[in-house]
Image 1 (cartoon, helix red, strand yellow):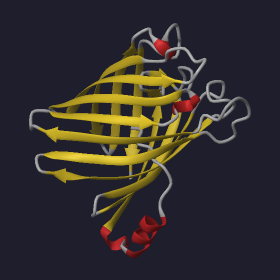
Image 2 (cartoon, rainbow, N blue to C red):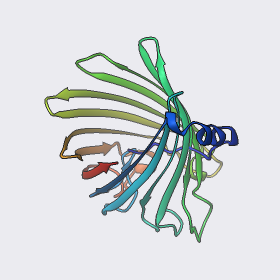
Image 3 (spheres, rainbow, N blue to C red):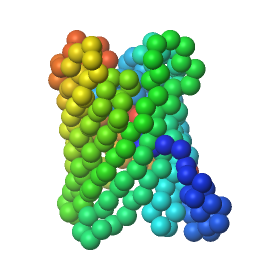
Image 4 (tube, one colour):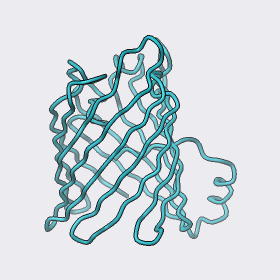
Length: 232
């Protein structure tokens, strides 16, 4: 899970304060053998501890914060990712819509250009009973200081008894800044998840093509990640 969006507007803060009885607060924690994001290991193929807090209102508005340890060599000296987000989700006829804004924050950066990044998304999904499908377009005006980015995310989830099988295909496209080589690449994954006694278990295989930012990188390519999580 990695839904991350930018800081909360004052109007939303007022709504939260005045409508607590109509709101839902939740928290989540997880430990994973490898924190993968769009096919790229964020902590140099090592374990990560993660967690966050979420608020959702009956109107469909949601806000939250989520964090994980990351590899400081990748993120300019920062060993932490701390993300904030805001959005709205709800049903529109036969489909569900999700729109939002997110910010990736990396506190304590000591070297190089800032890795802090804003990104916005629009997603649609539909549950067909035997399976649910989703498609999301993400856009960043300046993705990790590389240039304007769009990420296309296609997902499919299939219930299988007590488990869920999830498949994903994504494509990163970047209009690179002058002097930066082409960064475009594709990633895909296949995983199975289940719950038992309040705990979530997820095993996911992910891979990328050997192109763009993933060309020759040990952070990309074939990975198998096991994640244990708990929501409160």
